[in-house]
Amino acid sequence: MIQGTKTREGVCGVRRYRHRKIGCKKMIGGLTLWTVLGITLAAPAQDYWKQIGKLSSTRITVLAVNSSGHIFAGTQDDGLWRSTHRDGNWKQVGTDKLGSYISTFAINRNGDIFVGTSRGVFRSSDGGTSWIAANTGLPTINSIAIDSNDVIIVSTIDQGIFRSKTNGESWQYLGRIDLYAFKIVATLSGHFFLTTNCCLNVGNWMGSIHRSSDGGDTWQVVYRDPPSFTGSLIMDINSNAWGDVFAASLWNGIIRSTDNGDYWSVTNSSLVNVNCLAVNSRGYLFAGQQEGEILYSPDRGETWTRRGAGLMNNRIWSIAFDANDFAYAGDDSGRVFRSAQPTVIENSVDGRMAYFTLAQNHPNPFNLSTTISFSLPRAGFVTLKIYNLLGEEIATLTNEQCAAGEHRVQWQAQDLPSGVYVYRLRAQGFSQSRKLVLLR
Image (cartoon, rainbow, N blue to C red; front, side, top):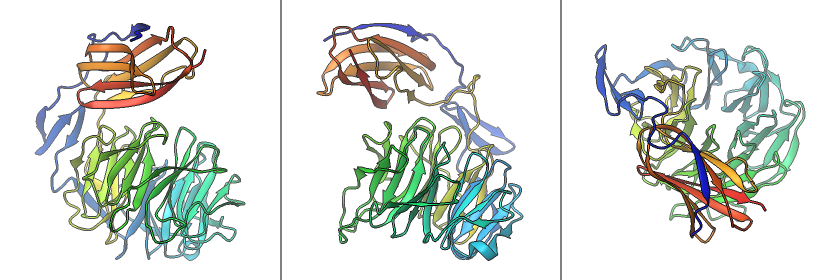
């Protein structure tokens, strides 16, 4: 085995950042709080959620919060509603133009709001007060995604996908990726991911995920759900700031990719009947279920805790967060709820995330030397190893007790040929792998 040489910053065993004690229980104003992985969260209780509106007798299809803190709620049959503060006081907006069915919502860098409806796409540049048609004949919209360059892609029920590079002024037809183009998301890594819930060969219902790395010009299938007796549908897809992509498979659990869609794994096959996924500003993943429950994961889908008490048994179809990480949820009966407190309270002194992370090496590709960074929410034993594509161990970079915080390991790949290699971090039940490319 070739070990290579390494130098390190943030040596294991030396504490770099402080975190609060794990598992600490305390009472504040009669509310039981638990500290988990350095994050304080309210224990499941009947008053964890507060109802802030009953907008319709039908489904809350989409929720969103803009930079001004205004909350928008789209309904299945009663149009679009807006509240200018987090405790409710809702008013309908754009009723005459938008119609009754609101399916999706997106905001670009300038704060322009785009709404998908059965009448196509509409845009507002004044916080939702007035709306103009940006549809140019588009059919009923399923989902809207806007990337960091303000490229907009919309999916439709059965007529494919469309793109606009002109803020919705004109649209280009990109084709029929599959029979039923469902949810679409734009990631910070520059990719679009699209889920489809059927196939062009009608008769075999199967959820799949498609990826575009060129702004929608070309697409490839990167995941296909294993078919079951009744079929398998992918209900929602979302991503976080670290490039992880999550999808909710209705019957096959939560699936995740940590490398921009190249590889996928099931993080929790028992977490079924999930309708929607959302990510707060700290990367915590939230899932709304058909049973009226909301669950959250602080560790990228590895473990889940219920946070749905008070929502009763109505299906949860939408979740959103404001700038202060208060959560908003909409159910099947037209009700909107807000969490009683922020969904995350930062504890680390420098604002770093309090869970396991393994970053992409830099530079990548590299010639001789590259740096691998990882962070730990708590002290523990860590291994970081390099493998070739045959699964053979090439080098051990870390194999010891490490302090909580961020660590960087420099690897000098001596005497190794050019090619693709895999580095894997294991720590306290956490495991993650990424690829690196060596070019001589």
